[in-house]
Amino acid sequence: MALTPPLLRLERVAFGYADGTPILSDVSYCLDAPRLVAISGPNGGGKSTLLRLIAGLLTPSRGNIELLGGTVSQQRHRLGYVAQHPTLQADTPLSVRDIVAQGRLDARWWRRLGRNDHARIDEALAALQITELQGRTPRSLSGGQRQRMLIARALAANPDMLLLDEPCAHLDRAGGDALMATLAALAQRLPILMVTHDLEQAWPHLGELLHVERCLSRRSLTLPDIHPTAHPTAHREAGHR
Ligand SMILES: Nc1ncnc2c1ncn2[C@@H]1O[C@H](COP(=O)(O)OP(=O)(O)OP(=O)(O)O)[C@@H](O)[C@H]1O
Image 1: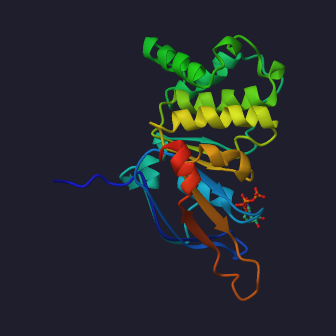
Image 2: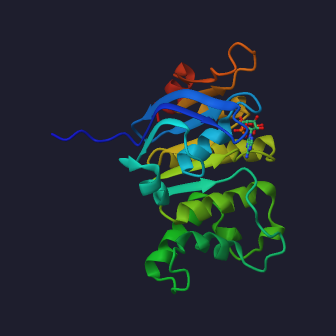
């Protein structure tokens, strides 16, 4: 019987930007089932860099990333990625629904959206609980509502994995808690990797925690590390999502 490949496998991945300073080295990790995975660690530790490597926006200098049973370049079109500071024209005349609908546009962007597209858009709006906001413009939304809209746009593309960089940044406690609960519900069927600096907030919702830390002492500068950490409370409360 053929073994199912993992959703994501990193093997001894290393990366440094053009100035040659190592940011990540020897990162290994395997995700074999949908769950909500937080990537946390100190500022500058390499969290966003790791997410960009998985998204195929950067290429490892060493090591290998296997994604959804193939290489990153083969499979990256199956990912939904929401960057930390996505560019969005605040004064766009487009509605929230129009923006979520962009998730349905592919290389044939001029095609008319069909019934299936609209069903996916409706589902994405509902999953992020913004159906009633669909006629509004982004300008009139709160930070949390705008973040939900951007995640809905990624979800409308029907991705097989979501990568979110600081989805709760700039949200107040209540907005962040609500978004985390939404993501945890989604992650029961869709693997989600999210960068967060607010572990306290994410903790009750997590299925797994990855700690990324670029070591700053001179001796260990080349040995930043990542530790998959089982979190008993999170596993118990989240039913091991
Ligand atoms: N395009 C780039 N060119 C050169 N260095 C970069 C680039 N992007 C990030 N870095 C550096 O790489 C290191 C890791 O950055 P990264 O954004 O991955 O960290 P992070 O853990 O996500 O940080 P934060 O919590 O502050 O967002 C930092 O020292 C940063 O200055």
